[in-house]
Image (cartoon, rainbow, N blue to C red; front, side, top):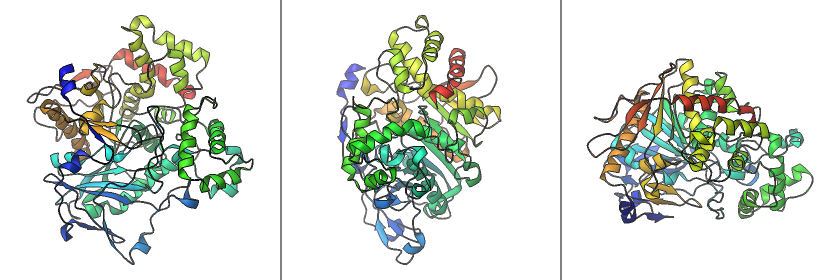
Length: 552
């Protein structure tokens, strides 16, 4: 294994991506034009035999100037109809402004980023009525670039779906939260909470209006997200208005990022620190917001990074994330889930075997970093429920005690909630390590590496792609087939690859089953069904009981 890893040649990318190297660039022609009425889009980004990508289509007006920190403004499509101009969308757009990661500063990207990428079969027309998959990227609501998750090979494998990836505001630009006590009527028109989540909603509305022009069926839309994108999927499911708007009809939630969705007042210190670091430390809130709207984006980007890494800022709530605003997000999503307050649509949900979001440290420190509202009594209960004698090592204990709360328990909690109301649900455990890491631990994002050409997200919107060998490609195709089968028929089995095992539907009895997604050989699947681990299920019940403290 180690020799294989040494022979791998990762491709380091900032502007060069593998699907562009292999693309069959063709001159724009009338047959590649998609007419939306207010604009005509053309693309020469044809990849392989079946796929063509329309990249960077606006779904809202630029959130710049006075629109900074506000809800997305729908496109003025009526005004666009006057020109109906032809726009070439063959190249990826600039991504949303990034927060830093891996000890490096962020700041790359653009505010003018409310766009989508549309991947479609070349021959799809308005009459095709193909099912649609909408993907929300992860990145902790701080970083992430849809370009790092290409879907060309998905379309080439199964040219009977439309796939859309969404750019939405992240970090302070998407989730800055002013003090609620001072957010009076005079500010409600100039500032909106949870703007980044509202971006996602506007993208879904744009899809409802326009996806038919690409050959998609607006009544068959599946939303899919990984990590923070998976958390977003859960927020869409428990959002009360989703039931009436019907912006989607099924959901896939991968490694749902179950971190705090704090109350507005808990983000006040973060707002104050951010505003001061950006040079907007005046007392009057309206003047601070006015100052922040006029400040250069590079200054704001550095200020948002300082909140996470500064030793001067001592608040435990130091991340820009969705908040319970009483309007769009009315309650902690886990509480709504347990109460049965969610949109009942077919669901796929799962996690990797060993994921967590933290590097190893002392357990108490890790839990408090993740969930600042945990009390000393809560920590003691965690340590009692996860005793060291139940694990092979401290590393395993740390990974399980943090990882189940952050990611893994979403599988059990969501699957049981959906099954309780007799809504079809399929659960999975992804159990194939990322081979580039040289570890047997199946860490966070291992399935993304396998499903997206060996991708690994870097800093400031970059990525590396490591070519897959023949065995990995076979497994990748198996995974993609399950996902697309669910999009096409709301069942991962209907169009699964020949030789792939049947994925058992989750049931409510004590012998609930899920699939283990595991690599086999070029000719034989390594995936198999298993019973849900009863001890894990009990631990997840304990975790669910901490919803008020974990605030997720």
